Length: 293
Image 1: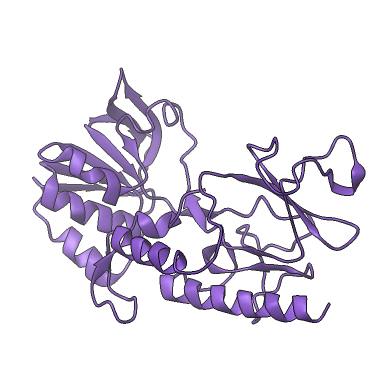
Image 2: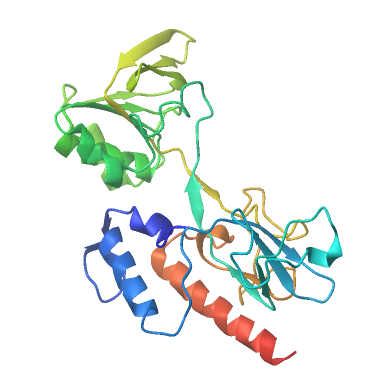
């Protein structure tokens, strides 16, 4: 759908071998230019809706656009008239769809998305230079977002539903040592509603005693975790309780010919370099699978 995925929205990246310190946009651009050196068809802006394994062992890839955009647009999976159209047919598929930000699911969230509510601090924090910004979350992403706000915003509120942060100690110490007139932290606080007019103006919260209060703000950064983009795989593909696709050391799923790589899989550590390594593993496994048929 979008080239680069979550990597493109990353800020500073210091763990990509050979590059020292870089950023998500620069690294994504390098990836794309490298890919373009090969004879590979790149189709952007296409949202895959479902992958279905057919009786002949091939995979039907149905997209949201459909209507003839792919090489097999008129073929129906298994000949069923109520099935999705196959826009692409493949003998093997590698799912490297990554993750997307988890939403709070509260009133006003969808209405004010991109109207003051953001899930990407690297993209949108600069919009609130000299203003008041609220960061919701308690992990590393929230901590990094709040520290970014310290350098940019006039005031930073941090809303943590837990009694403590769950990120790296160095980030926690750096944030909690900020003066209170710059950073104000609310622990054991739940976010109930986003409010505003054309744009966000504030949010309603409840403290650990159930008392409701409202904080005025110019922008809100939501960082409460990520959700794997795994809904597109066949229904019989095994996943863990978090929705991540289960793979073995070869990046194989329980469905022959279907592979998963990167953050969408159940790999324990979510790092760019690990995702790249899994991509290589999945590709070699897929080639071996195809050569054996």
